[in-house]
Length: 204
Image (cartoon, rainbow, N blue to C red):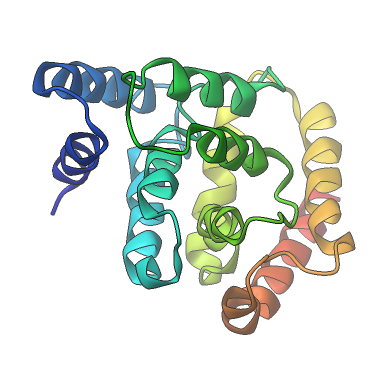
């Protein structure tokens, strides 16, 4: 099932009308395909959906988590600090009325992808981990990732970007864990930390 089919199936299940689904998909595709999106694009969404499919049985609110995946980076401007909040607000604004759906969970889940901190709701922890799985890729793939991030922040010169990026990466290392679920910690924590340390070394 491709991304559009997955999206269509989800919105049909939630209670969107067919014409709304088509229009919303075109809006979503346009947002994630903006030429400034080198990493935060449909490829990133597709990677997260793969994680979602793998760990579907672990989720208590699968529809809400999948909807949050599709919309968590809907608004993305590298010069702004409220992308997640704006994305969460937008995601809720297009929901049909009278649906059986935990919109508050969606809102909290999308906002949680800003700080990536442990959440009382376990489904949100899964979403955070899906978002950060990229950190544990093989070095060649990880390198492509951080080069894509650099392109998204191309408006900033190196003397501003490098310290800012290093600070953000060090924040991950200072936390007791990068990943919020035990499963991801066991599988990916060590690799992610090694990658982050290597990137920081390149920035300094």
